[in-house]
Length: 325
Image (cartoon, rainbow, N blue to C red; front, top):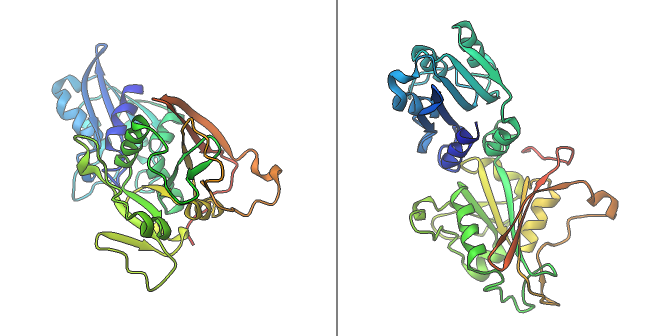
């Protein structure tokens, strides 16, 4: 299942509205087929893995990160039917598909055909890997990651606005990799006017995965530039393409998303410098007491990127989460 989850990461940010599923087929202790959801959503992971495995699929075990689909579409057959037709002997599934067209039906179809079914293996990691799809299904909006690059004292720039570069080359490269995993990337109007950011992916081989650029502006007269999408408020993110939105700045925009309860994940890149008197990374979010600030975030990952430190935080399950209005 760990290998299937790693494969599913290849489709993240490229296959919406379909989920980024991974599939590994094992026969006689050897991997005979691998697949992941392809750009645009087809072929599905199971179809790709079965095509590679061929006749070796008979009696084999398929490890799939999401319940195989049960509905037939104009773009292809149901994966549960494909697995049965291929003679798969066992299917191990991480999580059930929340899509009402499949939810439980795919597992039932496999079981009815005599296929042994095991569920719940690697469920927590699968929910994290497919958080974009699951958030869109549950809340009608993309999964939101807020990226902050700060000094040790929480500043994103000098007092005069100078911000290049707070973090080093390794941290900036990682941030570009994150961009490649998102369908849309957003900045506030102030950042747009001050920096005219390109917000593209500048990693060799991944340039084509630059996300759709979005600017947050409540002014009806603001027209932006060609190639940019404008939304008036954080609550409007449900209209954006894809299942993953990366918010990159500035401080007012970060505060607006946090105050609205629309941040699911925090990427905090921290450089080993102290600015003092610089521009803060986040504006006021309406916090009235310190007690209410605790328990909202949990550390998921931490690593060193050159001279900088990356910390990844996820919103705790009990924290407020907003659905679109």
